[in-house]
Image (cartoon, helix red, strand yellow):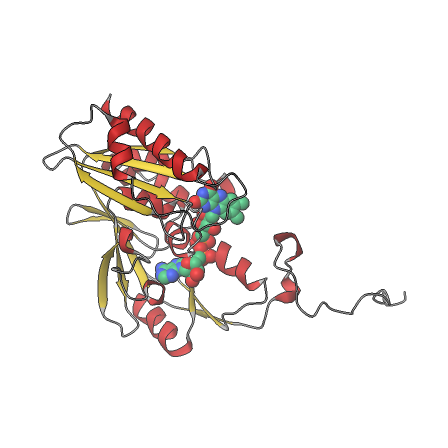
Length: 292
Ligand SMILES: Cc1cc2nc3c(=O)[nH]c(=O)nc-3n(C[C@H](O)[C@H](O)[C@H](O)COP(=O)(O)OP(=O)(O)OC[C@H]3O[C@@H](n4cnc5c(N)ncnc54)[C@H](O)[C@@H]3O)c2cc1C
């Protein structure tokens, strides 16, 4: 059988592939080396010495490779001891960086300790993605429309990590990527996500995703704090917190907390200011739901 020849009018291989999802293919992947780490310390060393990127479920990292971009070295976290465990420590639920969306949403510990968050998490993505994609990967992929940052910031979660020099660090999810947050958070290896087991009420609206999603949380004991988190408008979610003694006027509260919402920087095909206006509308509705 003759070997198929490329059509003479077409180059044998595109020089630069367009970045459209439908045009991505494995043939655009640059060569890369896969390392397997058995411990967080080993993974950290490979990240520092070889500039390796950590791979969790691989959905975003491998998709990125298909655009022709690096990295040249990848370190798999799959075999790191304890990376997929969910544990309880110091009143927090600790999620290892290999905990998937589904693993969290269906975990008995999560359902018992943070039931509102576990319930909302079962709505994220489809079953295939929930089984493969991790919470840490969702958070660290840096995609504005992804939901982990919105929900974890709303419940005041924080990250345990190893900095490039190997030292341990902890910082709030809400500080990821902000000027006051860790200097270069994506250089850290996240070793656990800490979710406080504080009793709280949580309401979430993802009906306008990927353009906008809004989460509202209310801590119900001692310090009554309300949090409004707006995702989708900026590279990282916008977080507003206030001390609340009265939720009788949720519309006023939402308007007050979101009065200085920065104009959206993530491109959107709809009318200008629509998302900014809708953020306050959805937040007011969610606050009213929590106040009932
Ligand atoms: C069809 C489809 C539907 C989807 N629907 C939704 C949806 O409805 N809502 C939503 O929010 N998301 C959705 N997603 C996104 C999905 O949730 C993410 O792609 C997934 O969670 C990423 O996790 P991962 O483990 O595959 O990440 P990976 O691809 O393994 O990693 C992503 C990034 O995080 C970095 N990283 C991973 N682990 C660590 C670590 N421990 N420390 C430091 N950096 C790390 C990697 O180096 C990489 O840069 C969807 C995706 C697809 C393909």
